[in-house]
Length: 348
Image (cartoon, rainbow, N blue to C red; front, side, top):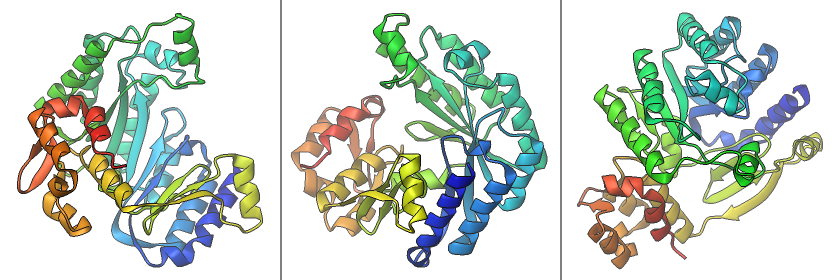
């Protein structure tokens, strides 16, 4: 961990001249599990960011934590360092589901960490939940949502289980030891989550994200608006000056590059105009309010309808998008079939 943190600090330092052109509005310390780091290493990272970036006075500074990897002392230090938003990877309120997912924590540990976070001063807290687990019922899913509502967690992210290759879950499915939940039940859970959360005052502001008033994740909104961002660390990605950069993912290679004072960039892909338009469309339509037509035209010189022509008309006829003089956004049906819409909007 020490070697990695030292390399990360060196990388941020190498970018200091480029960073000087920006005022940083959000910082997201993601993972992996950054909460595994000890207090000294976390302090080094935060201080390096402060020393090499111009931080907005109201900057949103988030960190991902897993229950069971933090305690009150660690949370207190985060708060004192200026971290002002926590994203807690709970995933389920049922311990048997957590065990099935290979999580190292229990629901009780989450509750303790949530209480400790509030005691030290955190108010801006997200919690992640996963639905469509094998053998999960809609009633169990509703219970998980209801628990977070009861706890007044101000931001909730809900994700459908994706079974990735080269994971134990994938192997178990291949060997027919478990059966994935069917798509209809998956969709029913998604709809029920939306209904319950909206019923309790949460704004559904992005496909997978819900918040009480003024608790939207500003960092992620920048992604969905196809804004610029710097990514530091092994395997990280950046979107700067109309180019996308990706770092070496292997830890040893990443560290070796920085030991030699080289930027650890593995790949640089300049964004074509078509790339930028496509990305702005399929990222922006993830937002429930959709895309501002005037902002799009200001950025690209044309409206979406002028660029996409018959494709937009077809999606309107299929009742997958709504198009007004002010905004383009997904309909309810489009929300449930968003991947189909996004594919249609990719420019060759």
